[in-house]
Length: 481
Image 1 (cartoon, helix red, strand yellow):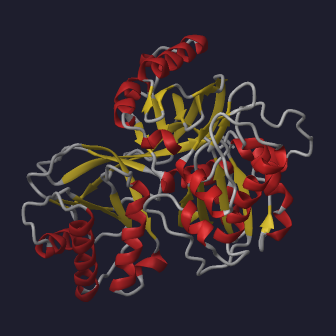
Image 2 (cartoon, helix red, strand yellow):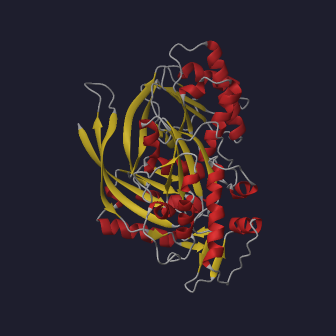
Image 3 (tube, one colour):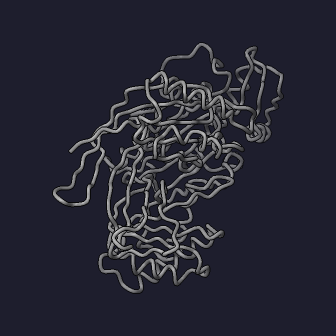
């Protein structure tokens, strides 16, 4: 049996904001009296809103009222009422996610996305979203390649590396098309602090209120482009790369070989487009020149440069219910756990990563938790493991020790431990985690019989069946490619 949901994707980025409406078709793949298992089998975008400049009240605040008016206007133009929406996603990305009132924006817009996801995406998650939306993740799966996607926006370049369709590494650079802005007469209007540091390093002097020849701006953009060569391993790393790394970001590990690289974001159009632009500053920034300078050095990348299925529109178009399931019999949860839990993002630990030693596993989980970490906030997440069917006592002890240690270090304020396992071992693992925690008041929710992946979101409902089972809903983002 098929069902069609009306879904919305609202993307609030550093430079632009867009609203997209789509019909998401889901089908119940289970039979008879089994628990329903819904899969997304179709997607049709029926309305693409205009691309709006994200309204700002100042360099540190989003204009909440103006943003809400944009969203309301797009709903009206599409002939859609908020009550019509079955599911959706609001994603706040780039420099916008760093604004002082970013969390308030989530609250303002939450009523426009049904009962689904409102996520303020940090740079790592934003890079993963762009890589999935562009088709880079899918390409890595289909060709068994390692693909790095560079999502170049107004304020940041988010890089995500995919293998077998899953993210294996991420980083973020404070490098983008709007780090330097000009007024209508061509005078410098804004210089980002990070660009000022870069200019100092390369001995270029920039001042607000002055006009500079093209060759000066090109020189700056060429250095910015060469930083991408450094981060991908095509050139030796320099102090410029260190200066450009975003707060809390580290350079790519490069303990793997990148087979292909792709580019997304507004700047990408000028990397791939062969038509020469006559007005290099028509957007009042350096985005076009940055794209041209990256294009000029493409042959220096050590990997094959490809054009993804989608560039500027590598964005979330909505969301659909992927699976409805019941987890029970072998689950473990604290009786005081604050259920239901809604819209909890999943981080997946692959089977290969599960097999490493405790120290390496701890580093892997810590690194992936950072994907959902903003500068001022750590989001609540659920850890997904495949687990083992006939797990040994030693393996349970080792896993529980690592998970308890990581949660206490990363979440020092007592946030609950949420673990999802594919194979039936949640009861023994959950109980073991509880014993390993030094804070015995910290709640543990450990469920099994559920298959999810990084980028999914999960709802865990209140106990049913005299407390023996927990209802679970898994939701997946749907991308435009």
